[in-house]
Image 1 (spheres, rainbow, N blue to C red):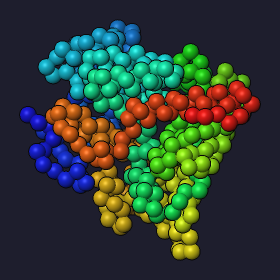
Image 2: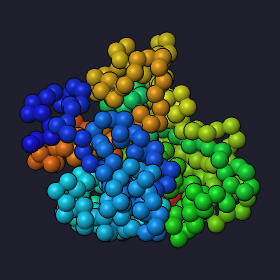
Image 3: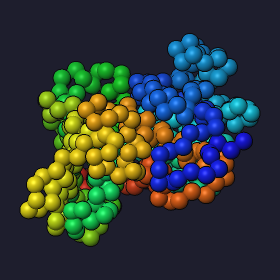
Image 4: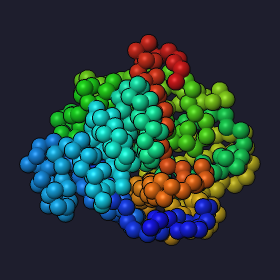
Length: 394
């Protein structure tokens, strides 16, 4: 039975599916619980299986926590991929929420089994692995999403549309920052969920850039429709000595030679979700702040400032409204943004299962190609910082 309705408006609300899709979980950390909550919230996914730990005892114990039968809690993602691909009720897709160094082998195992993937960012630690996953996804014909979830906030989608429609004219500069404060305490690196982020064997050549800097880079290009072309990056350890950077500052160039700045840190006391985007053009500007994510400042030069609010109606586009769940004045946040990502992922997975062609403009979810672009950005930042902050091509 087809999952998608026979007919529906691709520009309208996302349709209901004939059944909930079955989602597998790879990784048992905090982020997997957040993503599972968001996926369930969409009413388009149910958690059906998982590889929650490489320790067999802990893997089976996860069955109680996740309300799953023990036989569908696997001690390895390789075993899970093969077993679920052979089941008539196997998972339709998996989320990969492990530390970075596991992403490539885990994604490869599921792609080769014909199972769709949504992977945390950064996609992988090496450019060659990123290219290999792009090719594997193409060969398998699988949907492969990457969790650049900041691009899934409704007001970010609205900003993207305003730019596309010429609302701020020709872009002349782009500024983005991601300021956090959770590494300020001297002992912050001792926490289990932080240790691997500072371990080059697991996190790769960067910590701050790969973790939050890549979010900032993606959202800047996503909203502006201008890919990054060059970067001049400077890495710093501003707090307790660490093997990888906790702060970085960069000058950027986007397509059309548009200049900008990009900076990120985890040592900015008073900043928690401090992602801020500002794009200025020949006729106006846009400003968005993650900590006030329901609002988008939109200015037309010479006219009164506008503040657009998330909610049904009130000037938002139909494409934005289909990602909105509550009326203005009833806040939504990161869980709902994750839900928007999993909603679009569900639509793509259902279309693939139905063998259905869909308009390329239907979904704006980040894909494996975007993940590979993020890996190239990280690589360029590393090369620039190692060369005394010289300009490096991406």
